[in-house]
Image (cartoon, rainbow, N blue to C red):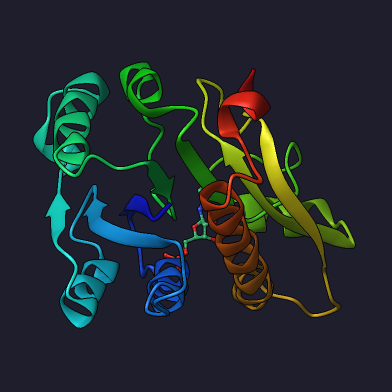
Length: 197
Ligand code: GAR
């Protein structure tokens, strides 16, 4: 089965890039059918580079999170995805989005959940002075990064690490976890409904 993916971003989309590169292999069992963003994200340029349609549902153009979510659902549904990936979407999605897509709605996070949830997972790990953090891939539910864990891996914090150096070491782990999960879902080795039951 070839999975249709919609990937939602807010930033540079470097994890998205690795997914797009992986899916250039004809054997890879998934295709990104659309890239969406909540703002004028740099990563939308990947759409042009890889020939993938893009859409933007600007968060600030809507009166509230619920109205934004309603339009986001409509835009994502146009592509009839098998899986929706939040790959650096820096917004909490409203319950209607969870209801519409979960458990086929997954999120990458730059920490070893349930440690350091939220928008600043890398910064919070550094501030806590831990000697290891990690990367996680989860099913999105109505909690803040508290959904069922699909995969996660530890990443050491090294002396002298900055938020950016640590994040740069976490991201390749996130990419590996994400690509493996997409493969496992496509090959029926991972059942998100079962995981989220
Ligand atoms: C990734 O590390 C992703 O896990 C994180 O944003 C980064 C996006 O990087 N997401 C969160 O922190 C969500 N709470 P990218 O735009 O370079 O792929």
